[in-house]
Image 1 (cartoon, one colour):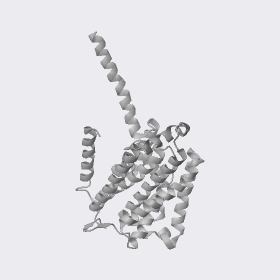
Image 2 (cartoon, helix red, strand yellow):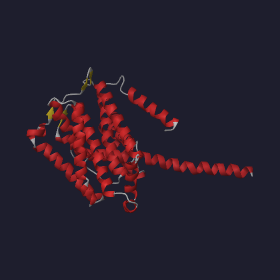
Image 3 (cartoon, rainbow, N blue to C red):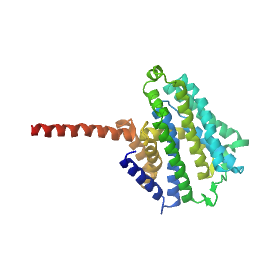
Image 4 (tube, rainbow, N blue to C red):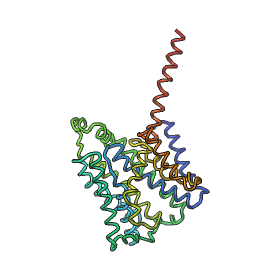
Length: 324
């Protein structure tokens, strides 16, 4: 990493550490929600932005992770083992869900993942003996690590921050690895990637599996945060919300899901001073962004940078011409 990148990374970590200090409990809760949804959006960004596969099932994987973690921790299992089981289960289910992607593409695949999200929602709602049905599960314990407890909101924020940083580090490693380059090749031109010897089937399945595992981890952190989960929290509308985070931030950009999650989670809270109009203003801002920059905020920034770059070159050429 370049020294400038290291400096910016350190500044970002310092801001995240200082962000909740002196804030009210509700603000800290909202910041925790942003970190959790950033983890889920990072996983979906790998599937959508890097591998080029459409998925509308990320909320379902959050639900699977949340319910597994809730049931195991309420039975006395430590959160670390429950979260590991959640991530592993979502990885396997994501691997199986990826098989339809080998035969159908684009909006057809979106319908398949949409059906899966609906199926998970119906199972969570109807299997009352296991999930509590529409009444949900109440009293989910927060994790403790020896003398360190996350019962209060501020310690839980730092716990969620650690999970977020670990997830971001893992995603950065994946993107920079040969897998990441293979995912990008799969997105750009699957036929050419296959002709060069890339196993496109395996990489498609892997993209779904890894993205689903991130969704499971997000659910595993969300369950102890709210300490109450019910099927409606993982319905299709929440999968669309996570997809919106990826698109608004910029699909295919590493920091895109984090920025998109900040816009989707935090912006409505900032606009609450407008009272009943905040959702209308929020929706209009998103529509305007999508019309003028379908590639999201990071895509918009890249366009502006590309426009400024030729102007600098032309000024330099003019200066050299005047000297001649």
